[in-house]
Structures are given as C-alpha cells and as structure tokens.
Amino acid sequence: MEHALIEIRSENPWEDPYREHEIEVEDSMFRSDVESDASYADGGDAMLEQSVEQTTETATTWSDVCALDDLSIGAGTAVLVGNRQIAVFRISSAVVKAVQNVCPHKAAAVMHQGIVGDREGHAVVMCPLHKRAYRLDDGVGLDEPGARLKVFACRIRDGRIEVGS
Image 1: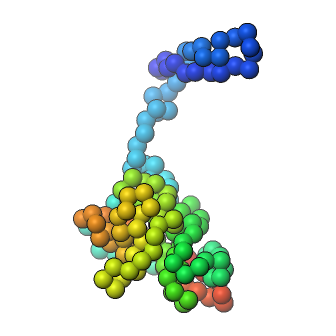
Image 2: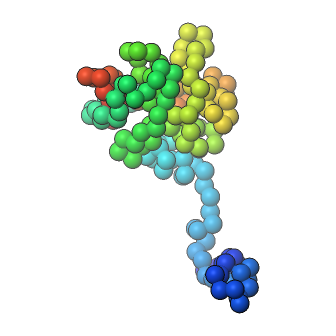
C-alpha cells in the first residue's frame, strides 16, 4: 500500500478546510490506461482497428433504440446496446448508420455529436473534438492512417431504428 495526500474540505468553520490527510490507497487507483478505458466504453472492443478486414458486426439480434422521427436528417444520438455505446445517425429519410460512439483517437464518447457530411460520395462523421473524419459505411478513418470506427448493422423497421448486435 502507498500513502497519498488528499484534500478534504470541511463544513466546520473552526477546522482548516484545506488541510491534507494521509490515507492508504492501492496502486491501481491512480493508474490511467486509455486503452482499457476505451475498451470498457465500447464493451471490450479495441478502439483502433488496425489490420482488421471486417469491422461491420453481423447482426444476430436487433435492439430497438429510438423512433426514426426522433432524429433529424444529419443528426446523431448515443444509444446503449448491451454494454456498448453506439452512435446512430440519420443520413436521409430512409438511411440510418451506426458506429461506435467512442472516438478512436482519444477514447472520448463523443461521436454521436459529430458533424455528418459527405466526402467523395461517402457519408462521413467528423469527431467534434478532433475534427477527424470517418466513413459511416465501413468506419475507415480518412484523416489518420489505420484509424477505424466499428460499424454496426442498423435498419429502419415500422418507423423505428434498430441496431444489430
């Protein structure tokens, strides 16, 4: 066990609110591992898919995530399917796409807030934090070699959006 100093603020006006206390902590409490954080956010899948030929998941079951009318064309939303954060985008009146919600660059769960557009005839989403574009068809990163988003099967059924898992 290591000892660490932490700051505890007290509501008692007679005590020094900025005093330091020594407590015992485990080493693992202070470790920050971006890859493990990213893997956890996406349900255990690797964020930076390199040398992976198939990044689109084959659907075995479908999860109803929202009504089609809940999304405006060009907008995205974050949904939780099982333990995976997924970003769902409405591309047109009859086309929806789904990719991992976690940006592969810094493991931030922000892809659902990305700007949707078109690049060379492909629907793309740009990470709102890092301005890197990813194709929504296959998840390929267009601005960083080897970067990919995991793509999920997505469909419209009876006015509802469903994501495959």
